Length: 103
Picture 1 (cartoon, rainbow, N blue to C red):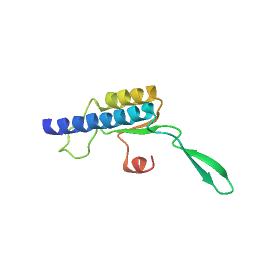
Picture 2: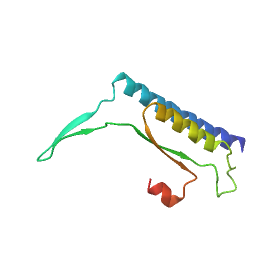
Picture 3: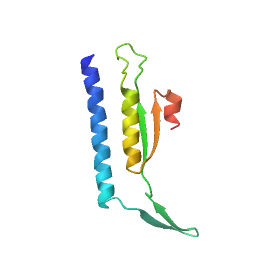
Picture 4: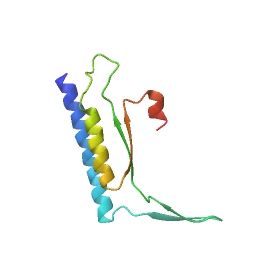
């Protein structure tokens, strides 16, 4: 059980690290909007904003996995941090399969 918790926390840390790299690149100007010309419609700018979907799973149907109490607070902390960096954030906590596929 401890190994499972450690693995989940490691995945969360790696996710935060990846987000941090993206934010650093965006602040350094490495991520720039892209303008494309669409025939008969004009110019469109892509990559204007940053968006994030933060998913937290704390309740498991399989008894092999222990329910995690801190996931809600972790999702909230990640959401707040991303919003401070200008991200539009959507969070899902314990989504159903259909809710996850429609997000």
